[in-house]
Image 1 (cartoon, rainbow over the protein chains, first blue to last red):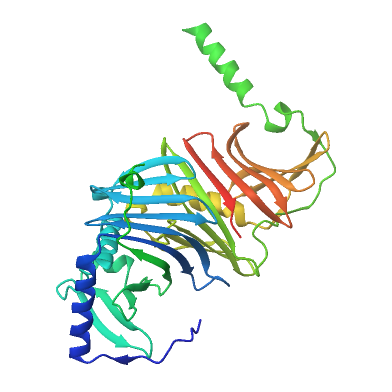
Image 2 (image 1 turned 180 degrees about the horizontal axis):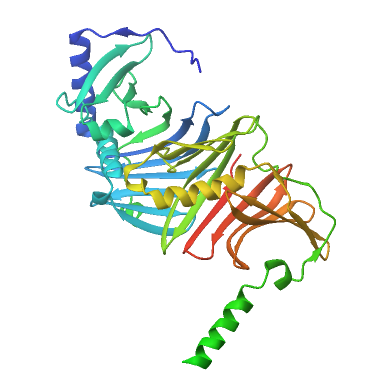
Length: 195
Length: 201
């Protein structure tokens, strides 16, 4: 499927370095994040992407909760190497140490949020800009990780804040997550991270 | 030992009584074809929230089916967060695993899911026998050498895989609306496996 995108050009080394500094500086002052999100799961054989939406909560250094509210209620959070799930009232947990996929995804999500993703030893990184935003492509060097995600694209706004994440599978199917109504550094109750 | 053996043999013979007889089905005029409409529309993305209970482990995900051509279906299962767990293609009698997560790559599991999904997507089947019970029509057919009974009232609301006169797997279709079953339950009676599917769009 063809998606209309704004023309993108490569960043200069200075622009790329400025972006990294800006993202790290913002991340270092970010203690909490609350945000709405819309997730679009694109599979090439479907007519429409599967749309789900909900709220994200992040508390430094590494607590992340995804709470889907539409079209079903499902919440998942990562804490102390465990994945806690509340699936329409049914609660369960998974030791993510036992699942490579979940443990790698957790690392990815946390580093996305805390600005720790510009790691050249782990990813091939390419920097682009459009008239409005800045876009960075990360391709995992780890073969196991690359089995799940071939490349992920992160879009940053002018403040260096993540506004969109697109994770592309080796098959070219992808998941696109768009963040809206993001609020930084408002207190988040610890109870949010108790299942 | 001998009386026990005799009792066992009698019990075995009784338990092997035919499924229609045990359930008081009456043989009726042969119906011809069975038509399963639930995954038959190529213009529909079939997206379900799935809840799976297997040996007291519980997990969820998104179950996606698309009819991509005559006799061809794609069946994909992802986590709620969109990570693909498995991706199967069915093309008439051909079956292909396009992707499966390493942790799920077990032949026995793939076979169980393949057999279950095949029943969901099989549209046209020829009936071998037709029975009636009250207002219901029950057609018997075979798929991959396994015996299935289709219960219609008048829509298909149940499919049962039967072996030695006993139900082994039960497929239940409820809240049927415009050829879409809003709720589908696949219940295995010989292993602890239940799959519940709830239609999302």
